[in-house]
Amino acid sequence: MPKPLYITLLIVLPLCLGGITGNGAVTFFTLVLVLISSPIIWKIRKRRYFNSEQFQGLRTEVASVVAEHNEVVSYVAEIRSEGSFELGASSTGEYAHLATFENNSAWNNRRDRNVAEYEPHVHNGSLQIVRSASVDPIKYLMKYFSIKADQETLADVQRVAEDISRLEEAVANVKGREAEITARINPPAFILKRYADDFWNQVGVHLSPITVPYPHYKFQYTSAGGNSGQATSIKLDARTLEALSATLVEKIRWAKSAAGQRALMTAHLRGWIKARDNHTCQNPGCGVSVAAEPHLLLEVDHIMPVSKGGLSIPENLLTLCWRCNRTKGAKVVV
Image (cartoon, rainbow, N blue to C red; front, side, top):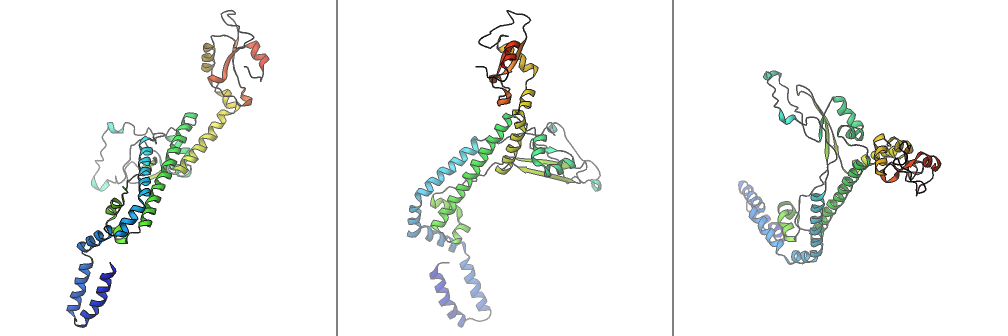
């Protein structure tokens, strides 16, 4: 309420009350309260505030802050629209949409208060699975939503984690900017309470309902009759994604070990490498081939030995005749 109005009431009320008693006083107070709470009064006060020199001057002062704020809002929208936040899905109920379910039991026996959801991010399972998922969410998330412990999945998790982290920081930045603008202009409380949209439009800030699109995964148990239902929900925020990434790194670490890399050396991979090398020894000082020696024993070996961190990938594998491989040992073939 403007100070002149306060002063007027302080002066007028005692004078009026001196000559008003009983129902007249009650009526007068009621009239004052109606006037104070009238939408017309609020609009007059709003117009007066937005047209004041103080507000116009402060708005000019924060113009650069406002411009940068709106650019950040656009950047946040860009990150959100370009990001992909999918990691895995559950196959339970994949084709549920092809069937129609109806509980046609008698009314006094119906207890279908809990209805199962069939969505890619919802796994319908036993009560034990739901409860175990609440204790070990990362383990069960990987197991029931097909999140594999391999390099490709790790890259996806780290990509989503980066996008989520960038969005969290950007959204927090936007909110901080809006708070700074509000604090610098310092509007009356009734402006933010009743005319927040008008305030931001006058300032030049366009609020956007941008949020971080956290992936949500759910383990759900629903009893056959729908009488009971329990669920464990997992939000893949930055903290959860970091835990998931760390778990994947730990699991993949075994695959990078000597034992893990040797386990990856399958018969199919060995055959593919030999065909790629035309069934010829790749040792520059040898070059013998199956074409010259039909019964030549060829082997596939690591260029960088697994004992020194070499991986079982095509770029680190080559074909050697058994003689060259025998004499090579742990040396690096160049």
